[in-house]
Length: 96
Image 1 (cartoon, rainbow, N blue to C red):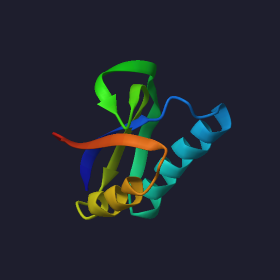
Image 2: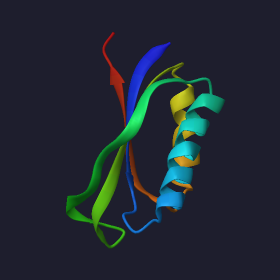
Image 3: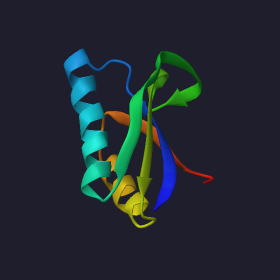
């Protein structure tokens, strides 16, 4: 298993309930595909973006640290790509 971090930028105009549901959905997608989450939480609330993404100039940054097999990343990317509440995401493999 490899160590990864996922940084997800979420739309800033979501209600608190929608944000909580979206964060839970991100965690669940990782867990369902064989990942073991070690840490997750909001990294920055309503941070300004350098350039607009889907006409938004701010975003909520959500950071997830997890262990997972390499094939998990493709499955999680596919699931995150279709979610309209997510503006952008990035996966980084951490050194062991």
